[in-house]
Image (cartoon, rainbow, N blue to C red; front, side, top):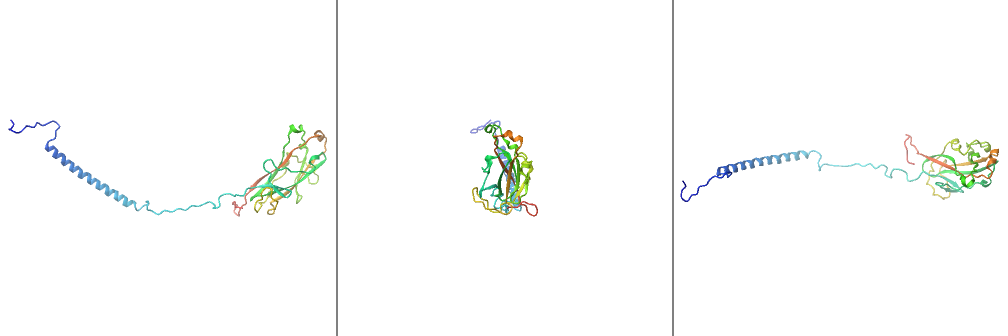
Length: 260
């Protein structure tokens, strides 16, 4: 039975009693203290780690660099390797299609005669050079009717200053056995020293460089008078001497390449 003025409270399933609430609050306070202790330990550990890290390399450590520039002026040489010709006292470049070179008697070149020209070949650059040469046939069969006697010509090349025979027969050019096709194989490359002074521009008056930087060639082309040549009556040839050069770097005492 219930008393007057009091209402009976029936426990509801799932409702917390005062005892339950007090127990829950106690557990929360204990849990909070425990988490607080872990947090303190965590901070202390982090502090110990940072303190230990300051002994090693950090953002506060000293730093330095050492940079090696390979040649302050740059690698390479701004002066170009250059082989040129001298015609009428003027330095001339002969790249590409080549340089027109007048030869006395070319218009009346008949069997039994010899053409002759003198060609100064010069080193206009900073490196020593090895120079070779060959004959290139520019014959146009359509324009000449196919009559090109270039295969009958006999070639002789000498050093114009010393008389040294580089190819052929210096005493009797008609007796030379060197043909246009065989000239390159019959001659060894010759050396030209580096110019040794500033390069000359194309069209400049020729001024020699150091000794050995120029070689003057005396070129003779003989046209033997043989029964075979009769078949080329009215024939013409178009040809050129092509000079090729390879640079030879200067070397020091230890065989190392050095700047010119």
